[in-house]
Amino acid sequence: MKIHHIAIICSDYKVSKMFYTEILGLNIIREVYREERQSYKLDLAIGEHYVIELFSFPNPTERPSRPESCGLRHLAFSVENVNEKREELIQKGLNCEEIRIDEFTGKEFFFTQDPDQLPLEFYEE
Image 1 (cartoon, one colour):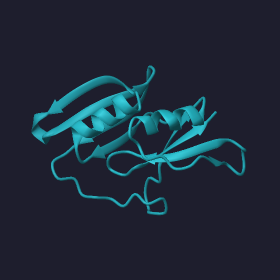
Image 2: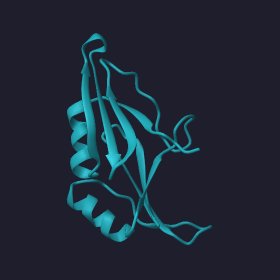
Image 3: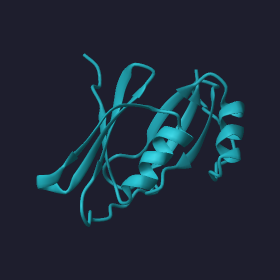
Image 4: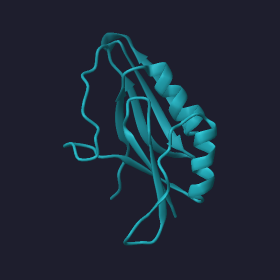
């Protein structure tokens, strides 16, 4: 029917919480600390649409996030204006790649990354 949410495990909860809420502007639905797992769970939304579960766990293992590694390649967010979003993220201290053109749709997009180097794409709709 549709994707319900995407789960992300971060290495530094405070840094990632700040990144996803203050830099990307996602809204907090709920934040829970699970004592038995020594883990935070932060439910995040774009507007009212639940999209990301952000988890912290003690000593998570690293996973390659290069675009051609097995597993999740990247997350892509729709934006109205790629140029404005890129400039906003640069002003907030992110290193953003140059804007590219999708060879199939002609739409503009660019990549940056989250604090754990998960590639994030911003794609103009």
